[in-house]
Image (cartoon, rainbow, N blue to C red):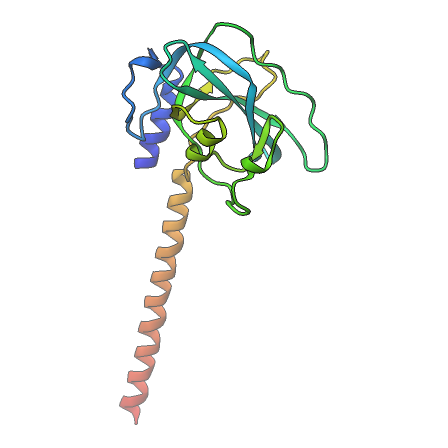
Length: 211
């Protein structure tokens, strides 16, 4: 039920009222996904590629840009969307970020989890941009960007057919159907164990009575 409520909240976010990002408290509840607007400019020389992202059985990457809000409230990570990047191939050049002052709209969401964290900080080992990473770690990103304030969430941009990216957003959580499937599986195991125990115990008692 908790996951169903979370998914419903996420689905309603895009159609909900738009709030100014600057008016939101810094410690938003994890289940809140406000639809926000923010004005500022991109930092075109700084960006990241979130690798090994699966969409409809296809492997790709997320293009993560860095945005500087006009109010100076701290830099903001912006998920521009997904693009296909098959292993062993060179992806096509990404569309450049818009220049100058611009207003963005999207869902203000927690950073995605996942990614195998091995081999230390991969960002420190790269000198060219965009940098490739398997996960978004806030302290590592903040240090990689030279310090300064970095907002704890990222902006999932509203869909735009002309953007060159796929922007189909879902929360990074296990879906309710899988929870129910696991529950059914484990209750089935428990029921089978009880049946086996009763049958074996009944057979043992019968043997002892006959003896």
